[in-house]
Image 1: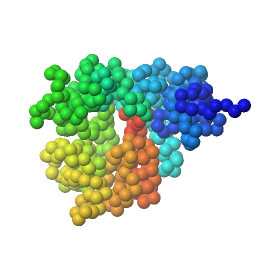
Image 2: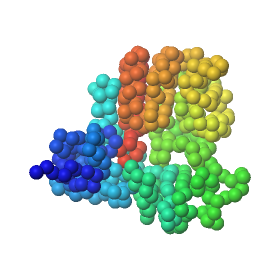
Image 3: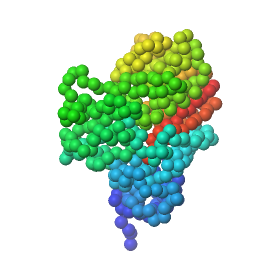
Image 4: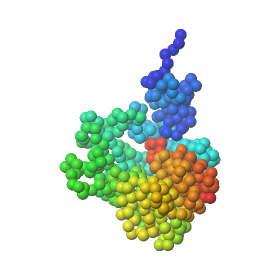
Length: 420
């Protein structure tokens, strides 16, 4: 007699295989690939199918019961992000060293599969993370409000808001804001920013500054909507104005760590022309300006007008920084009637969004014939794809370092240095 087909919500017993990009492991059920969250390689689990369409190429599942546990499994550091919970803490059940080994395996696999590089870059911890147990690192958090006015986060692959009592990945300065102890307008969005040094936090409600003391939006047209971030590099303090709703590295140590890594990677650039692509509020631009010196040139390109305004303030005392607002390809190639921003470059630094740079940007960079490209990436697949594209154009000497700037999640940061 035929059995009923498996469908979403059904539980199955699975033998768990290797890790895969995206925070899950690979298993098979009757020949079909199943991507399973909340598990570890080598485990045997009972998993609930969360996406099991009959014609799907693969299924998704959450491990809801561990039958045979890995030695790398630990009690979850954030149970609310477990099976059926909020997104953003999918590795909270994994010991910190194993989290980094997981990410190293994913980074190496993407480099091998997409860039044909046999590399195994170590993924190293940020300062202080081991002492904090991989918690209390986020200086910025986004929350949503449910129908009863409770702050929380969306469920994984869901629009449903799940209320939270706390957010253990947030720094103590964010936690001190008490966002989970009050009621908010139903359906609203909360953005909270607390600089790593503890100075002047800021909360936005649906994009507008919110006064926690009066418990209402700040109606003043000049209400503060930016924070001050301080980054110490080689004994020098760099101060940045950053829009609260703009982009800034969320790990408390990430700005200094990545800026230091970039400066090390560019090497001696005194008097050189350096491009800083996807430059944001200028995290790298100001230190690079100091590195090229008064006879050098830093050409910074950013598509977000708000970030460019911040960058202008942040680099106001560095005349060697040229800021260009617009699409990277348009600025570099001179489309839409404008001349190219630069004809040649010695070094190109780029920190693209999660989707990576892509072929058009790589072609525009290659046309400038830099001797070195320094690529800061938050997605290993996009990084590997772009390394392959640069390799086709002559940048074949590649080193990659990994940085675990997102503990308890599958995300990582990597820095690639490519020489021609």
